[in-house]
Length: 220
Image 1: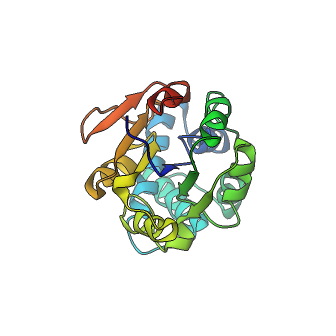
Image 2: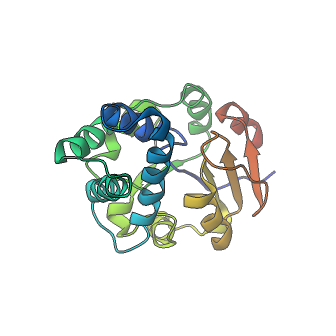
Image 3: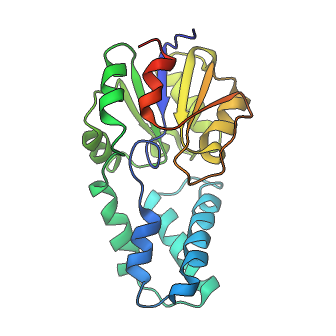
């Protein structure tokens, strides 16, 4: 059984119920017809990925640019207040119900690390909401790049003094996390199947239903 020196986790979507799509639905319900809302939210998701692939920018700008591009594509008016409403909601979002108890058991045996596409002043809210002690909480802001780029992972290795071969990475996103983790040679790669991306058992990825299965993979 693989015993990692550190276990790193994506935060938004994997541990925190990242309801940016539903929040956008609520915010734009008065402007986007119901039969077009799914396409609107899908565009918003796609533009957020595109926005993190270039030079680093504050996460607020990632959200703002994605809202602007989505509204332009769908000919929907928007204001800065729409962006603020979505961004300002992030600190209140809570963990998936399956996360705290199993993660608390693991925290007693392994050092846990958050590697998040977030900001230094934003991620502490989510870490506190999860309610489990973390060895390190690392952000894209500190790394100067967002996942799926390799730079955040390399920043994590340098910070921890540990190579990927001695780590396990856990995420619900193959696109943002696990394909890159595979390219970097992580010792173990775990996909938590939250249903927001197509599941995969390729790239050396082990797929689990939820966090209740994670302790068993670590001999707990």
